[in-house]
Length: 586
Image (cartoon, rainbow, N blue to C red):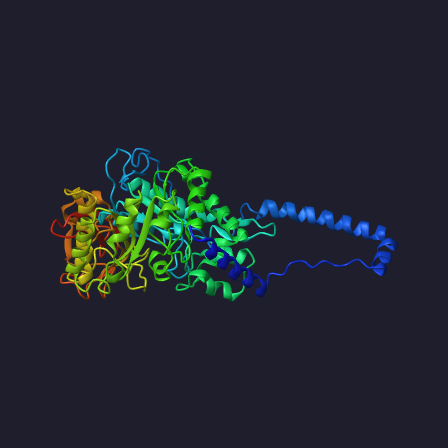
């Protein structure tokens, strides 16, 4: 725990901010005789006015309670929520919860040591990367999670499954007049669907509950503002990284109003009932751990333990609690970590650290966590050349992690899906984004391949299921006699494009029964049909070696028409073939 002197300094700094900001307390008005005389003379008029005001106030409060006050605003504006299908609940896919042993290791429900390897897919609950799209489509969620599984992931961390505040389309849109948060139940649709899909694939989730950084999905500053701390100085103090007193003076960690609002939000998230399972999220095994936040600067042991106790004891969550502290910046600010911090957070199960620079790698911190019975996980890992100049450096690093007995797992940053439309992948500009399997022959392709191998080795799957690399089917969106465009399939290295004459229809049965409708391949290489490069998502005779040949057979009703189908080919050396796409006429 922090010293009494340090806490005193923190509260003094906070009290000074409150004196300087725009929180204005009501002033007392002294009685005087002229006022009292006027009050006595018009007392019945005042009684009537007060009665009418009381009636209107009650009506307003009732409407407020029914519509938005602390319940559900249902705010979506003019945005149409994507359609999310229902996924059948299978309790046997993820049976039971991962637990923490006294030795600081995690254990599966069957009692075996559990090691996690996987990635971050931060946008599963709300997105920022597609213009006009607030929530990701069911296809994009499916595509990303299926790709994560192909890459050997048994765990995925996703910010927006738990961080969703301060926006009309977020889980929490604002604060009502009575001080309670305004909730938006419609925002649960993509979150529920993502959890259902992860459960169906056997992937467990790590879910942060807020963010230090004020990004599109919300942050700790939403709660600071909603509690009345609106001055820009509060944002500056809350983002402070090199001053112990000022970092801890952030109202998010210390002011009762802010803490109460955040607790209300945590309760709302964890008590949500998934419609597919009928279970509150506190009882859902798909959640491996609730993370108190993402890279929280200044989160001391007292605040962290308060939130961990809320999650595990007051709300009765069966999952683990991960510390969301920004360990690197707090160490730079000389905030305590090892014995003092670890001993003061008994309800925290996992300590996490984000590794983006070589010099921040410290096996000693992992060992300190395990020595006090806590697991240690690298929650974000930079896999790019910015951190590891050569792919061999990345491989050596991952193998070195495996040699550290105190390290429980690693999750790299970050994975993206195919587009809903033609053109390859949804892209992001932070420099760490991955588009699996990467363009053949590139450095990214080599790195993603080795991360898959190391992930499988890390989790103990030395003989992986070969069917896990079977790519998903593409979907043909448009076709002309000389071109095809498609939506990509998870795990596809490239595609096989086939065409045939249309005799009467483009059905699969016609190709099987009529020898005139035999399929022929017009493209089968990354150079002419892939999701990478200048021609991603489009095939055309402009760069194809063999153009289609429309039939002119007597008796055919489809004279001059052709049919197309496509098939995804997986990565080498197996080059597994996926299922065929839809058949289209051109």
